[in-house]
Image (cartoon, rainbow over all chains, first blue to last red; front, side, top):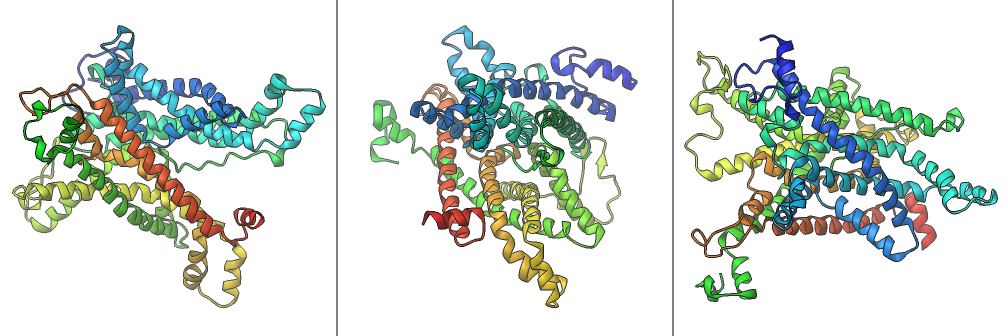
Length: 268
Length: 293
């Protein structure tokens, strides 16, 4: 069987298109590359959706934590503490069993027990908490002069927030937020190793890498392939976020622009 | 455990709960909490050691050594940590068995890699096939600790490498002008001063390490996650004196609370340490303290 056939059979295996059974023999390099790459679809799916939806909640949470209303402030602070203070792994397990307990109550909860929705919700809340903290920190360091200048121009309320506070907050938070995005993608590998089952062996990249390592008892091939894909993904994220960073900083003189300093030494 | 626990079926409410939470298996989950603490107690210093070695070799003036150090720091950062956990446990196990195999069975003819099997001679197996259960468990735990130390050592190396570069360069130049050689500058000037710069990163790392402990479950150690799944699953009256439904949700809620408390306590303690260390330092934090006083 040539490599093209393998790609045709297994390229979209992780979403259920193509061959029904996973390879039982051979375990060629081509098979491993194809299947692990097909698993990356799930990692990207979880990462992109959680990041996009989490962004808005994160902004809300950051504003809540910075607000003067004690109820909002306490609620946001607790939300951030709850999701940043406990392991994501345990959060996945808890959420899965919570949804499992809710399932008999109403059929509405049926989709929540499968990974595509249940795990997505956990990742969404988790990234909202982490980036909420980042945004909150940035919000605290918005220069007072900027706000005063906005006041002098007669801006207030919504228009001041939209034109001054929010863009500045994003600009200050962006390098840290890039880190958060990278680690969110890394965190998506946990999904199928917590409670959430991989239905019909449709799993993510790590799920397939682990499958091959178990079958061949040789970790030296599948895991480096996985690493290759993730380094590629990380580079793409850095590139994309770098472009956005450039746009956020476009009004500043060259030498005062905040450089993208990446510190990739966080996991959750 | 308690004297009134003889006939659980006749109990209800608090008494039943008290008996239920003190069964032998529940004692196992409480012991596994100590496994987590033990893991942290062993891993933190050994990761620091790995990190120190990594950072100082990355700074080395001998190119191959500095490449090794830098590669060690860089590789672990770009890839999900959990992939490393899964990788190192098998890889280390095979490495140890292969070394023992080479020493103990020098005249072994067959290939070690036979298709999809990894075969070493019987006396090179780790742990030996006939050794008792606790040896297997200890060996598994040892592999887990080593894996944690390697992965977190890379993170620590990154932090320490940054801290070493944060030490003002004038200090090192002054030391050199006093006639100290490289080694003396490193041990007498650089190492004592770098800790203040390293502490925020290291305390962050400690938080991350706490939150990584449930991953022990993936390494095949019978830890709290394992027991929470075991004990929480629904039990019928046929197999146990304490039948109940699916309580796994509550068990994981308890774990969640345990970790929240643990991180909260660590946060408070680390804050205190940081305040002690910044006291009198010529940094922003030290200045703020001076003004507040």
